[in-house]
Image 1: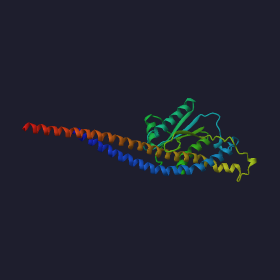
Image 2: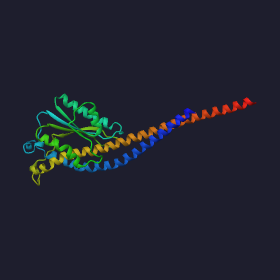
Image 3: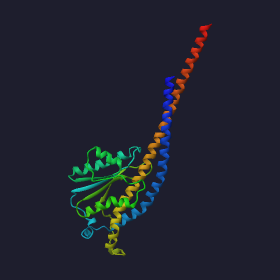
Image 4: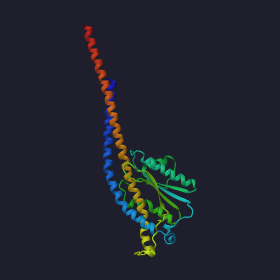
Length: 286
């Protein structure tokens, strides 16, 4: 009798868990659709901006545009890590943290002085536990990133790069390929790498001038790169959470099936025992 009650209690517990994971899967699915819409809307503009800036890139303009400077040696670099504020997303945060650690180790092995900027409670919690100093800890970004969020993150780094305080800036975030494929990657934000097919001003009519185009586009280019990383990371988080919750729901269904079989066997054994006791008792009066 006690075994049947224990199994029944476990069945109710697993059913409640399955209801929660199924609800979280549905919420993540809804958020994923909106997040992927933002990703697909940002990509064409970002790709065009990237092509224009890198095509107009000229190291000779570094005196007029400090953001275009290419340091001879990298002495100090900043790594901006984007993680989530919440868990229950499989290995999403773990993979990002592992990629950030790999990049930091790689830079430090080369003798580069590094500083870490972390967005998201999961990344902050991990590096705080490790005793790692963080130059930035930011947790107030929502799952709907705005261009202003990117501006607040990257503008201080851009100003320091232009002043020569930093020689490189990297962003660690997830690349959104699909809901099932969101690998972490490291993006070199600064210095800007020129395109192999650079624009020759003599072959094009540039209006306004090339310098004025760069003056307007360079800060926008840097912000857009970080904005794209934010929206792709947000979509990747929802994709990973939906997958994790679907797996949890499926596992709960399998566990329920096994528990119900166990309950039925225990119940059957109990009924058989009761019948045997009744028959034995009746036989005793004969």
